[in-house]
Image (cartoon, rainbow, N blue to C red):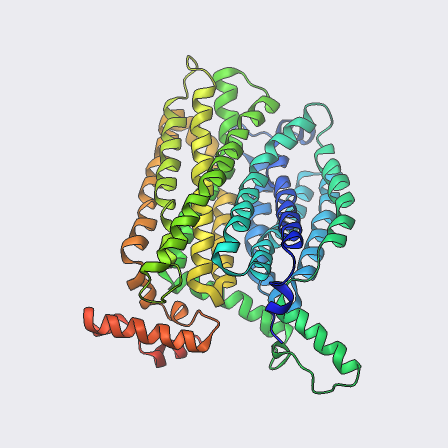
Length: 500
């Protein structure tokens, strides 16, 4: 009996119900990351925090993102053994619990500490969504649209935070930013419990085998139950493998840098937009949060055009000599190159339209371009790492998540000084030049992707099917032995030694 009997044969109606529900969880748990910042002026007055020289209140954003970077590194890969549902509900409940002390906080230090755990729990829930989609949708074609929707909710959840927080603080005390989220999110928890069920095939089969053993069939065991590592060993693997990949895999390190910068800009705008639009147009907190909707609109537009990217990706299977009939991983990057350039263009547009004599819509359109680019970069990285690393996808994505959240934590700290000292125009231009430089990452992978994958021990051993993995290694080794230097491919004995 195979895993697919359970997961892939579920009705499309239920698959979509599970997909949209988990994507909605992703959106909900992402909102508090940015909603907090809308209360800065009220908290500054309440606790007498002087931000004239340094954005001290942004340390709560730092703690949120550091938790968001570290927790998935340890706990998301564990869901492959314990199941997705415990991961969702434990992280969601922890997320709710740590919203309460944030609402009751007697001082700023409490906010900083509690947001570390809240951000970590939020990120675990968000990162599990990709695993759920992989669990229930069979093949790249079926998985494309669900992954596009997940990418959109990941970006929009964070981008909507300032709007939610700004709307609440404009009519209520800032503590209601947390209270309203607690009320809404807690009220939805029973519905999530009723809709969702376990999607991880290994876990489903293990539960079925355990039930059969209770009925007297003592030899009934699922494959995942044999040689199953203990919890401490599983945690060690969860931490060590992503760290090793981040340090030794060029694709993981370069893609992490690329997507991390884009993700950092997503959080940088939560500080930059109020600075620019309050200075140029005299906007209040709620008005500046409305301007940040441009990021969400850009991401939605990118989602609408993404099916063209998916079509080009699937068509690449006809040209795949490495794994005939399978799409080429680099085909995931076709839209990433223009998307990265649109991201860069948006930064320059936003910067050089930041003049008081130009209408607000002009810089807002630049922000929309940045939102379009962030989505394109994020989805390309998630899909490429999942395709190229397959068996090790959770580790590769955890490494990228760590980098994303570190940039999201610390880049906003530099925003006030950057925009004060360099001017609005040149501050955005500097960021645009960095974005332009990082646009070389997808171009390099498009040109040299196969050669880079041939040198990667993890990618050579990434397929779940042992026979296919052996065929893949032999095919690559054969071509690179004749067409390039023999040293281009590591001997298989070396590969096994590296990740035994």
